[in-house]
Amino acid sequence: MAYQVEVEQSAPAAIRDERIVDLVTVVLPCLNEQDSVGLVVREAIESLASSGIHGEVLVVDNGSTDRSVQVALAAGARVIHEHRRGYGRAIRTGIAAATGSIVVMADADWTYDMTKLPSLIDPIRHGVADIAVGARLHEANRESMPVLHKYLGTPALTAIIRGAGGYDKLTDSQSGYRCFRKDTISRLGLRADGMEITSEMLLKSSSHRLRLIEVPTGYRKRIGVSKLNTFADGWRNLRVLASHAPEMFFLVPGAGVLLLGAALTITDLLPARGIEIGSFRWQPVFFASIALILGLQTTLVGVVFAWRKSSVEGHELRRSVRLIAAPSFPAVCSIASVVLLAVGFALDAVLFARWLAGSGTGIADLPIASLAQSLLLMGGTLGSFGLIVRWLHWDQHQRQHKD
Image (cartoon, rainbow, N blue to C red; front, side, top):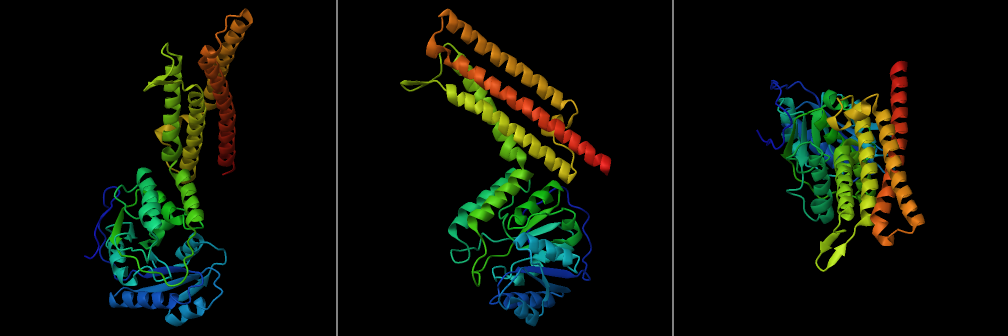
């Protein structure tokens, strides 16, 4: 077969028999693509027909003001309208409106080679994979893809998705040339309205343990003006990644910074007072305090995101967030808060008493004063977090009661 298995998640399911009767719908979101949409539609129709694949081309017009709709209809496509702007919105509308049990998503700007359709469709028809992604980077050049996208943006986002626990051999997470069964992807509950739908689909596919392969499909120079907004789309991608991969974005970094702050605080309290760096001695008093507080806050934010992710997607809570789901967790936060506040106030009281007695040593007491303030802030943070979790528990209970 033409495709190559590159990435696989979980054990393969039983291989399906070839289903010649499967209808394939090629979904093309379109916004002012009159110069290319007709070419793409005709190429897709011819490719399906020459391969003996029964299918249709569905163009999702996203508010075009040129002749895109007329050109698409003349080329043989079925056209529907989605007036709410956004690539992800158009893709979701197209998947919902698809007649075929197998869906291929692509673009109407000529970048994706429609002659490669059989290579994407075959592994899905044969049950080899649940989702096939067209890999672009190996053939993309300066004319078809900006250098920053090829060597920085796409590899960075792909690395983050791999690090989030999904598809560790994936090479091109941002490719919009994909094939899957309609019912399989519909169960993921995709919500993204923009380009970030590509990342959301992969993260949710991974969490549902869908098998994925990459198929080399290349990438051609687009016809017309690109709709991609590098910074806006990149930011939306990061938001999706943060909400679906909280361990990587919050929990692990937060715990690391918290431990670093604790280690530096201990170092600062030792008789050696700080860390020797060459001929200098660094006393990380303020940095240690900042690290303790930010580390704790980031970790707690990650716990909330992870809990929300598990609740929304209906998956079992990870070990890292099972504690927060326990009814006793708000009480644990309250107790920890009281302890930290008490120790912080006690240290401040000792320093104040020494000052009144005239035995204070000034700068030598700075590490203790810094620790006291850190404990007070951390205690207040934990107390507030406990109240928030108590409210989240109550809100979740109310929703379950209504259901």
